Image: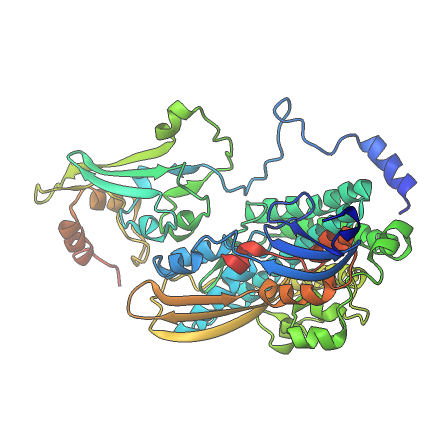
Amino acid sequence: MNFLTIFARNLKQGPQTEAFPLGPAFTPDRLRGRIEFKAESCEGCRICERVCPANAIRFAKTPDGMTFDCWHNTCVFCGNCEFYCPTDAIHQTNDWDLSHVNADKFDMVEHGLIPNQTCVDCGATALNTAPMVKNAKPPLSAEEYTELRARCPKCRAKYLKNRKVPA
Amino acid sequence: MSTHDVPETFSIPVGPLHVALEEPMYFKIDVKGETVSHIDINAGHAHRGIEYLTTKRTMYQNVVLTERICSLCSNSHPQTFAMAAEKIAGIEVPERGIYLRTVADEMKRVTSHLFNVALLVHLVGYETYFMHMMQVREIGQDMLESIFGNRQDIGAMCIGGVRYDLDDKSIAYIKGALDKIEAETKDIIKTFKTNGSILRRTKGVGVLTHADAITCGVVGPVARASGIDYDVRREAPYAAYDRLPLVVHSLTDGDVWSRAMVRLEEILTSIDLLRVCLRDLPGGPVNINDRPDIPPGQAVTRSEAPRGEVIYYLRTNDTPQPERVKWRVPTFMNWDSLRFMLQDAKVADVAMIVNSIDPCLSCTER
């Protein structure tokens, strides 16, 4: 293509730069941006904490349960946590707009709490995590899942062992 | 000293921060008039201690860390690292994962080569065409962002396969983008063959003869432009390269123009390889869907990064962290050849010749 053709084409197309902040910026669906944590689907396996290369993810035991914190100012947005999460409790949204004033720098945290509960069987205090039942055969019904979730880890194991599996 | 005793040679510093240099490299150049008579290369301005850091991170964290060694070869590093880990643990990557690795590799090669040749045009002084080439590269960058979620650190690799998958919609999108890049690249090649400004500044400049190239042990497009017909993708196929119609381009002149031309031709080859990959993409899983412990052992793997051959040595022990990770990057082999290329060059060509080896100091000095 000779230069006059490129010139004519560019004249017709207008500027190639984005109008941001006056207009929308190019944001694909798959863009790896801000981390989103869903406490209700977390199994509490803490694999995200182990694979995070920047140590941006921290779990901590508190009197209310287990807290999850992802520090966005430490995060490198690699997506390892989402990739290795067995229950899709962590998701990277395509929200890239993380600019903030310096005073807010300690608030750039995705926070979640896996609360404590009292086991319906033994009355022990345990975390209300999502049960690890990915490989349970046959898959649990919604009712069974709720029943299982209300128990502590020991009683969950018992529940699964005593579960009537149709032959 | 009287005015008549002006010394014949002057010593001028180029870099580490210099308007025309893209990388923090320091050259002490002795000039006689406008001609370079001797050069001293000094490095070490971009050292970040990543080699040490890899021994403090687990294998799975290191896949991300190695990706951040270099932004333009940011796929070759984790891929070669993952290949080494897979070799030690005896992991077989699923067939679809193998093809998707090749897709990610070639996409990065297209944008990396376009970037380097665009910078050459910028150093030639043809700013308008530089802008145009960067805009062509932007098609590739948008493609990377849309498929992988990031323009540079694409995060495609994991130990045991790849982290992304392609569906019909994304395959159609890639094909559309490749068509655009291919047409533009063909025009760029035509311009490089006919444009007077580019030809006058780059033809016969910074020549590295075949003999010197062998002496320096150069790799990648620098070697291929000096008539060394060598490409790791063909000599030691990894990923899916043994199944693909790979054409290795080599030229004999060894000047700046030849190195740019080899890169431009390789863009077209990469586009062909991508099309074949997308056509033959097998079904099945993209990775092993597991996170096995890597047993103690050691392995050496190599791959063809956009700049040339990158070699990884990995030694593991009983801990989750590797005991030693060592990599040899293409720029380490190529920058010694600058002594030959810059000899008797004009001072005005120094930046252009340095750019023609596509130096990447962030991975050389890590």
